[in-house]
Length: 410
Ligand code: C2E
Ligand code: CA
Ligand code: CA
Image (cartoon, rainbow, N blue to C red; front, side, top):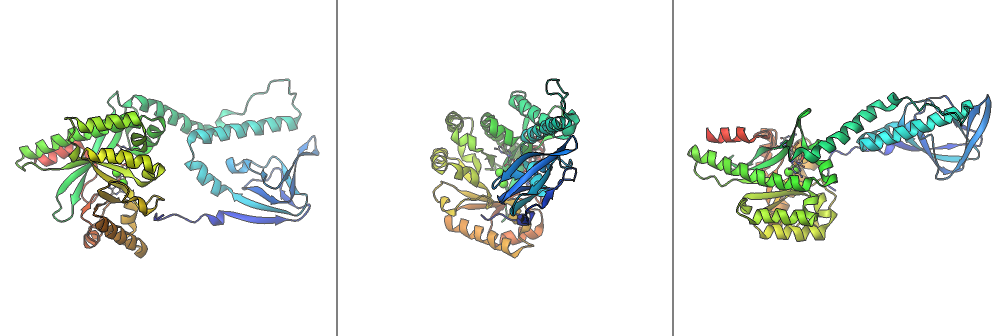
């Protein structure tokens, strides 16, 4: 793994030992952490009609105090060590960080189930008649999680039809030759022109599109649309008397497009037909995608390569893969992930990695594109390292087709 900027989280988990009879937490106290019992035993009690009742006895491997991780309510029970007990402590901030990254629907389900459990326990402790129906917990307890989950579900439903409704568009970012600063190609980047939300960036919907499989038709459309745009770029340049610029388009490919046999057939058919010139297309594939099913990926890539397309590894250096795959796949370009470019001038270690990636690609006869170049100083250093192409805000942000055509025609 060569990723940069991963924070250490070890200190968020720690261990504590409790003597026999010691209180671990008390009913009514604010709950800040949960525990896993490593050894020993813990009794969980709660007050019912003014008397303490035993709810359960937990042992090695059991989890306790877990509700505090999910909401910020006071403890609903008391926990006491029965014998010498060793606990692993899970702090709430550690858990919350993970919950925030979790699927909003899972997050909502956790909160709903927890609130129902609390509600049932409270009602039992109050001595409510189980035969009389009780009202459920107030819905606003988890309204934020619910809004997020529902908005996510709705986005997924909308995405199913976005392609037919013509709501997907491509923006294009130039890829520049560092020698003469000429634009040699464009990366096509997907945007969703949502009727209510406006322009939605790919980070917010590519994940869904991959899960549901709609990425397969979307990805095929993106390649055809990018190629259509490329023809118009060349025409615009030709009209402006710039001659026939060769140019290429670079299109992002998702895992599903390589593993779905019908999708791959359609992709290959489009590249083999007259409509798309395969040699003007580069397909960008991330490392993690290749490593998930390397054998199948290698076969699919061979097939695409035979049609004449270029193949680039995207976000190079961020995956957890071994370098041995590089010569097993028919690649022609490495795209250095922008996290390396962003850190290389501040961090000597990162600079060494960038230098090594450049050396490696020379050794393997691969082209290099540095991604996310934002400053002249980064550009200068990349030139010195022998990197020959770059892309980034320093040159241009991704822009709609019309703007590129207008600039080429000037
Ligand atoms: P990516 O393939 O790594 O694309 C590069 C991303 O970096 C783009 O974000 C681009 O706008 C951004 N970028 C370019 N230069 C700079 C810079 O100088 N600084 C910074 N901070 N960022 C820069 P975008 O357009 O939001 O796309 C995000 C990701 O969505 C892409 O990352 C790609 O993984 C995915 N994606 C976009 N279009 C498609 C598509 O058609 N199909 C698939 N499967 N994925 C796509
Ligand atoms: Ca890319
Ligand atoms: Ca990238």
